[in-house]
Structure formats: C-alpha cells, structure tokens
Image (cartoon, rainbow over the protein chains, first blue to last red):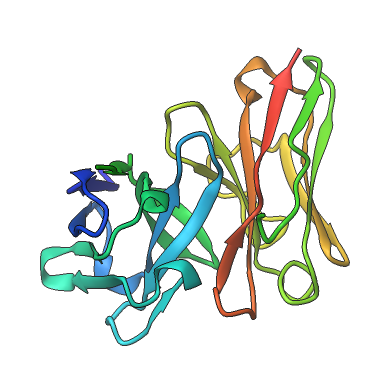
Length: 117
Length: 111
C-alpha cells in the first residue's frame, strides 16, 4: 500500500525542540521531492519546507528559517523535520506530502505539535 | 494573510455547479502553470483534486475541473453532491522567497 505515516508530535514548551518523522512505503521514495505542510487549529494550510530527491536542495518558509531543518534518509525511506526554538505559533498538525508534477499528490495523516507552557 | 486569495465560503444545491476562485499575482498564479487544488474533509488529510491548473489525478471525478485566467485560477465542481462538502485549498509555485504558497481555503456547503 502506498502511504506516508508521520510520528513524533506532542506537547513541548516554548523554546523546546521536537523531531518529526515520516515513514514512506509503497513507492520509490528516493525519486520524489518531499514536503512538510502544517495546519494550525482551525486555520488553513501552510507549506513549511521541502527537500530534493537526493537531499542536495532544501527550502523553507521564512517563518521557520534558522529554526527548522528538513532531512531525509533514502535507505530508511524516511523524511524528518527537526524543529528547534519552538514558538506558540508553531502549534499545528504537521503533514508530510509527496511532491509530484508541481503538486502534493500524497499526504500522511498528520501529527499534532502543541507548543505551550 | 495568505499569499493567495480565496472566498471564505461558497454554497450550492445538489446537482448545481459552483466555482471557487484563487487570486494571486504574476509571481505565482499568473506566472506559472503550477496551480493545484486540494479537498479536505474535517479531521482528514488534504486530497489532490487538480494539478497543473486543469489536470485531474487518476481516480478524481470528472465533475472537478480547473482553469486559469491571468492571475486568477478557478476550481469548478459540477453536479454537486453531498460528499463534496469540504474545505478547498488552492496552491501555486511562486518566485518569491517561499517557493510554495496556499490560499486561505474555501468552505463549500452543499445545501
């Protein structure tokens, strides 16, 4: 079955860190750009970051630059998002999404990150 | 404020057609044919329904269609069905510092 499964979300204090993971199965992970997209409670979608097939290019939304790092391990078919210096405004469901033909064609079920004291 | 502008809500009766607009600039919607649309039911992950302005992924109903004119893209759903009630988001590639942007989302109500 073709799927993406996120994990690693939870409750963290402001200024803290969290590492999200996304496990891919059912497709050749190493041949796709991968993305993280988040959705704050009751709000719309926000693209966060993406990474090229071989990890050589990475891009971020301005609000997370210098705090978040996207990475991947093609041997483990996994995508990661290291989140440091977390803020209340980072509270959201984080989805990993596969990049395909300039769109996001596969999405995981999401993992909730709550930043609160 | 989202980079792409969508109406907050639209509604229609079963069997009717509705159109959702997505307005950007020449740096995004108007400059590239990389507009996509997503359907999201409450508590669920988004689902791709249109890519490349007007292309439907395999398995998506042909009741969904997309188009673009200038800086505005549109999603049209014909023959409305109760199951179409959901939130819809547009997205576009952009030449700005952030390469991908979404619209604020439109809530579709089937009356």
